[in-house]
Image (tube, rainbow, N blue to C red; front, side, top):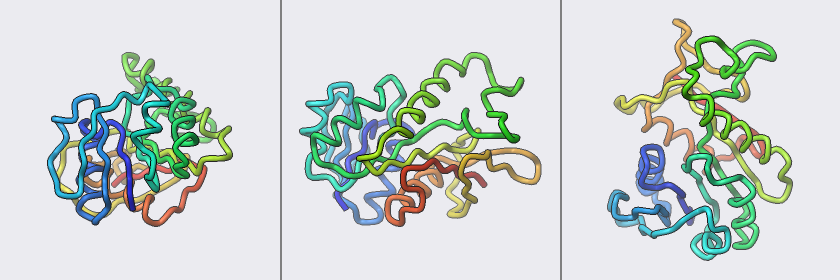
Length: 202
């Protein structure tokens, strides 16, 4: 496939870009600092600002899908408008874990353990997901990670879920960046969560 990755120079974006390239996809890797994007034969680094929907549409035109690894300072509506203008049918988003349920009706962000300093950023992800849930033209997927994403060796296995936080037998919710990228590209290649959210953790 031809895939455009937004925020391709960031931690999640660079891992997703590498995973796409390893599987033979043609990647347009878009970032404000394209020189920070890992070099690879199947990766074309491009300078771009995703906050400009018209300019972004030009960059992603011809893609089969867009994967956004951006922070939530770019609204969902901006990305959706760019995809519609460019005629790109699919959007996959690296989301946050804050809105995952830890008990019926209780989100992770609502628990006493959730750090106060993360709440503003986390709320951005919640607003973004809510906006996607009203979208009917673009085939979107929102990927909420485990509560903790670590710099750990790739294991190649993990468990997936939908709206509930996935935890291990110790109650921990963790995944490595490389396995997070595997889960995202698996979803790209074999869609199981069309217009829905999913999560993954060890």
